Length: 361
Image (cartoon, rainbow, N blue to C red; front, side, top):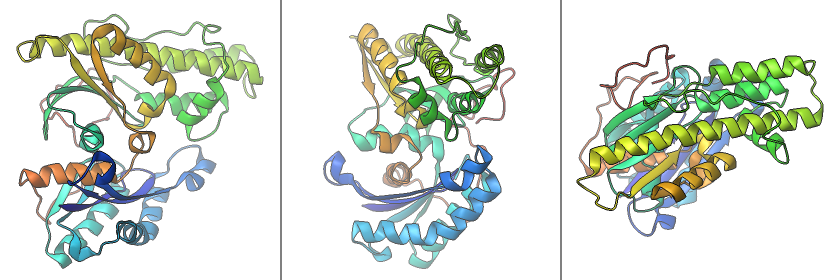
């Protein structure tokens, strides 16, 4: 089967064609991603209206490029999938309406994909990861630990009380005067920095739950910047503070994920006598090398099999949307053309809201 995927939930306009045949490397027939970094850099963050207009201006050309790269036409498609949420609603509408138009004209199934499920199932596109597995989902808008029991079956163990991990990187980059996008900027600045110079907190560390919080860490960074005299910082100060912040985030991820592993083992001990757990790390922040290294340490000490997608599949892309759509198509799970785009769409709708949490879903 061949599925066209469309992703427009934030600031990348993307389209891809994915197949369920061949090796993992052969499944992605095409993947085209147009970044909007240049449009949003003057604002030091993503502007929803600017993003929506850019998606509208570019979506047709991006879809055509994906089909051309795959050497196929619309008539070769078995279905079209698009991110139906969560995300910036203007952009989500652009992608959904484009996919619906293709589905209606070509008389093929339309599949609305939860953007978070696209991230969750990415490693199944990249290789064989069987259900159930543990997922650490970390991006600009989301920070969650979940048990993935199957397609559409998720149990959330914990989320953030305030900022998402990627959001904390973006805000810290702004505090340090490092520019946009914040995640890569902090990682670049942290190289060669002294991660022990600034004593930063490890919020929520040691708690019996799996909750995250990054607002206090961000405030601590701001106070150190003020103590140093404010912006612009000396290069060494910015480098050391970036490294200290990155180390703190990685330590928090280590601790919170370790607790989730314990809960996962308690629930599935009857399925796996060896106690081995497959841990998938997905989302844009999964590209961070310090985070990957710290989680590799966790895997080495906790009998984990760690799965980290290629960098190109960590950040927003349409191949993951096409694959999630394909997995749903194989189960006969499609959507009507009356589907309504969703700015919020939790993977686990039964999870109670975290006290003090923002609107991340």
